[in-house]
Length: 233
Image (cartoon, rainbow, N blue to C red; front, top):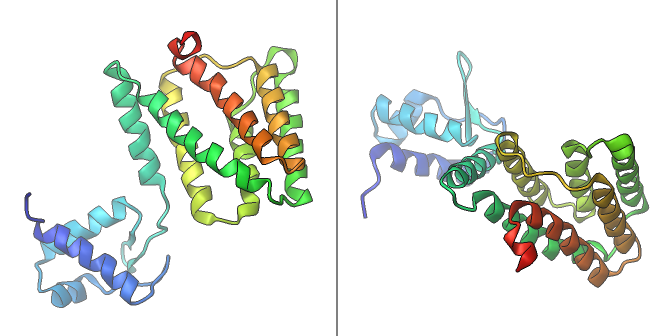
């Protein structure tokens, strides 16, 4: 196992510093010179570490102002998922299908918990989004991905879990990125609307088993478009 480089060691120590000082997004970090002194490191290694952390949104370098704790968003995670799926797909491997299966496992595991108690306002939002889907599908149109994405995020809003929302959004961003290059066929818009309607009604009825079945049925359609062999299996 290769030993970490000086820059990689500094990356780790900067992360530890953020945790130890209980810093959050936007909080200032020590200057480059102060980091050099703190870690007994050269300027090149410190700069290399900061650039790597900036690429992960752990730090933000503002020229002329200093270095701050970054947004800590999951956009690099989403980009990594999308790129991995695209590369594997173009090598003839099921990269996009694998990505979808991970999202399916996450959502079918969560939807049952959601039925424990969804606020009326959240149900209203989901029903309004289904109505938007129906309007988009009218006249042979397609359900917009943005509408579909908003529905799934609204579905879990009552869990009040910021990390969960970011993870789900990261999967959507990754899927969208790959689909831009590789059209997956698109399901019948009427079927899409009906499936989302059933999910809402199952959640409204506080029927966890029904909600899980509805979600699995929804993903069966997606899986069939990405992997036709699964339909005949």
